[in-house]
Image 1 (tube, rainbow, N blue to C red):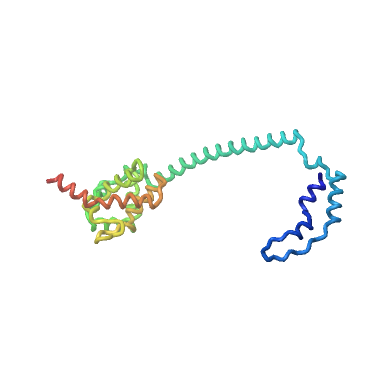
Image 2: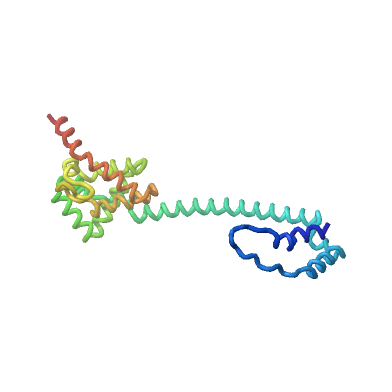
Length: 232
């Protein structure tokens, strides 16, 4: 049997030489391997390979299965522990955010500050922007105010915050890129504060926030018209 297998693997050189592929490729002369073939077959026939070395006993296989089972169980235990740690870290992160942004200090917002909002016009918006850049205490108060507004999701947060901070009349004069002589919102400090707090709360990306804020200001003129009809 081994002789047949070796003959099948090494092939018959006479057959190779007599085979024509008809594609113009020169066939190289065969390598003389008669002695090598004979030696290999002799080794196999004499059982010189210790078959015991390539066999696993049933007990070894059982031990390996037990070991693999223990590894899998340990992995599940580790994953469950990491999830608990991750949950605790989320709580710690939230507590730090609340301390940083002052959610627990909303009551410290004074009346003079609160009367600045909603911002009525572009001049007032420019003044607010100057305060955000140059007055850390004012910026912290604004953070506190935005944190106190909150929302159920990004869209709801953007809507509630925009209503609280920016009047409908001012909204009708603003747009994200400032097209059509509108006031540009894209790089404003007040918008950046809204975006960062939104990302902290809802884990949304910049694109998600920007999509919602653009949509909000896109309909500013319509809200003004609706307000005017209600006053008539």
